[in-house]
Amino acid sequence: MRYDRKKLQEFYSNLLTKDFMPFWKKACDCEYGGVYTCFSNDGSRLLSTDKYVWSQGRFLWMLARYIMLIDQGLAPDPDREFYFTHAAKTYEFIRDNCILPQDEGVCAYLTERDGTKKETIPGRGYYTSFFVDCFVIMGFAEYAKLTGKAEMFEQALALYDRTRAYLDRGEIVSEPYPQPKGFEVQANYMIMTNVTFVLHEAAQKLEHSRAGSLLEDAAQNVRKILDCFYSPAHGLLREHIALDSADDDTLFARYIAPGHAVESMWFCREVAIRAGMDEAYFDKIRAVIKNSINTGWDEKYGGLLRNTGYDGEKPQGRLLGDPQEDLVLETWDSKLWWPHSECLYATLLCYEDTGDEQFLRQYEMMSDYAFRVYPNPDKEIGEWTQILDRKGRPMEKLVALPVKDPYHIVRNFILIVELMAEKLSG
Image (cartoon, rainbow, N blue to C red; front, top):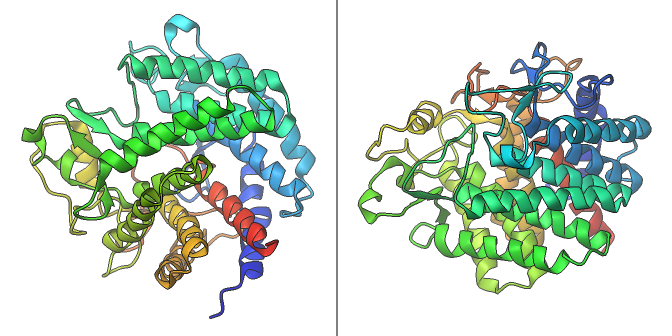
C-alpha cells in the first residue's frame, strides 16, 4: 500500500473530531471546571466524580494543543469556542484548588468534584506525587502558549522551580509508582525531559529569558537517559539502574517497559533536534524504538506486552519484597491502550526521519492490531477500551490511577496530524 500522508492526516484528524473529542466534551464538568475521568474500562459508566489532578493537568495541555490544531485548520471542529471556554475553567480549577502552600508540597494529588482536596494515603497529606506537578506545569505552559498570557507562564515556571527543588534534595514522591530504594529511575529523567521542553517551547513563543536554560535542562536529561539507561548490549532502555552492582540480578534491574521506552525516545528526539545534539544520540533513539517494539511484540496474540525481559519473555529476577514487583509480574502480559498510540506516532516519526521501511512495517503492524481491538464497539460511547489481557479481551484491572485518561491517544493523534501536515507543506 502506498504511503499517503494526506490520508493519514485526514484519518487521524477525523478520529479526533468525530470520536475522541466528543467523548471528552461530554466528560467536561461545566460547573466547576476540569474533567471527569473515573470511568469504567469501556467508558460506559462514570464511577466517581473525584478528580485526579494528574489528569486535570493533562486535560488542560490537551485542550490547549487541540485548539491550536483547530486554529491551524487541521481539525475542522465547530466546538472550538466550547473547548476554549472550558480550558479557562480547567486552568482556574487547578489554580484555585490544586496548588499547595510552599511548606506542604507543590500540587495536590486528588480532589472532590468541587476542588476540595482529599488524601489518597491517610496521614500522608495531599502531596504524594511529583508527576502531578509535571502535568500541571505542562498544562499551564501550553495554555500560556495558546493565550500568550505571561502570568500563566510565570506560574508554570514557579511550579517547575519548586518541583526541581524537591527532586534536587532527593525528596521524591511518586505515586502511583513508589520508587524502589537503591535504584535510579528512568521515568524521572523522562518526565522532566518532556516538562522542560514544553516549558522551553512556551518560553520561546513568549520570548522569555529562560528559554535557553530550559532547553539546556532538557538536554541534560536526554544525556542522562541515553548515556546511562541505554543498554548497548541490547539496544534497549532500562527502567532502573541499580546503584549497587550486587542488585543487578533483581527484577527491577532486568525488566523493560517497551511502550514507556518508545515514549521516552520521541521526547528525547525533539530535544536532541532543538539542542543540536550529536548524531550518536539519534542512532540510540531509533535503535530503542525499533528494538522495543520488536522485543515487546507478542508473536502469539499480537500487540505490545506491558513489560518483558530483554528476551521478550516474562520478566525474571531476584525479588526484594517491593509491592511494585507484584504489579510488574501480575500485569506484564496485559495490553494497555496508551503504549500502542505512542508506537503509532513514534514509528511514523522515525520513518519520516529515515525512510527505513522497518519503521513503516512496525507502524502498519501496530495500527492493524490497535484499530482491531481498542476502538469501543459501541460507537455512541466512542474512545478506546483501555486495558486488555494478553488475548485482547477487556479486563477490569487497576494498573495505575483508576481513571480513563484524556491524554496519550489524543496527544499522539494530534502529533501525527501535525507531522503529516508539516511534511505535506514541505
